[in-house]
Image 1: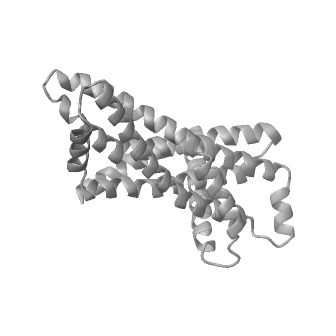
Image 2: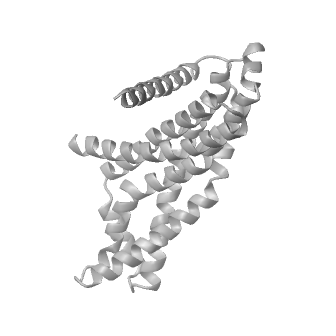
Image 3: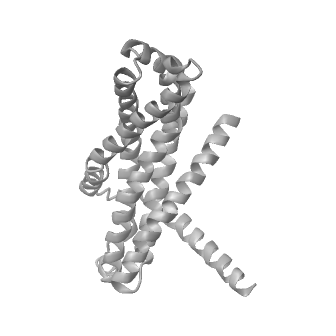
Length: 254
C-alpha cells in the first residue's frame, strides 16, 4: 500500500511538472525576446531533417495497406474501392499517428538528450545566472517549432501514403489511376480532414513537453541522460495513442 501511494504521489508530481512547463512555455511565447533564430533552427531540425524518414515510412505504409486490403477486398468484389479505405485510414488515423511516432522517436528523444546533457553539465544553471530564462529559450522555441512543423509533416505524410497506395493500385491491383483518385476524393470529407489536422497539434504539444520536462529533470550524468531519453520516447508514444483515442471519440461525439 505504501509503495502504491508513493507511486501515485510521484505520478501526480510529474503530472504537475508537465502541466507547469507547458503552461509557462505557452505564456512565454507571447513575450519578448522571441528567439526567432532559435525557432527557425528548431523548425529545420524537426521538419526538414525528419522529412526523409516520414516520406519513407508513409509511402511504404500506404503501399502495404493498399496491397493487403486490395487482395482481401477482392474476395468480396470490392477491390476497386481500395482508395476509399486507404484515404480514410491514412487521413484519420495512420497519418497523424505514424508521423507523430516518428517525430517522438527522433525529435522527442533528441530534445530530452540535448536538454538533459545541458542540465547535468550545469549549462541551464549558467543560463539562469546570466539572466536568461531557460524555459523561454529552450522550451518555448521547441514548442513553437514543433507546433508549426508537425501538421505540415502530417500533410506530407498523408499525401505520400495515398500516392504509395496509388502505385500499388495501378501496378498490382489493376485499378486505373483516374478511378483511384475519384474514390479518394469522394471518400474524404471536410470533417475527416479536420480530424486528421487537429491531432498533430495535440501530439506536438505532448512530444515537446515530455521531452523538455524529462531533459530538465535528468540527473546522474550520462546514465540519467540515457534514462531520460528512453522515457521520453516511451511516455510520448503512450500518450499519443491515448490522445488519439480520446480526440477521435470526442470529435465523433460532437
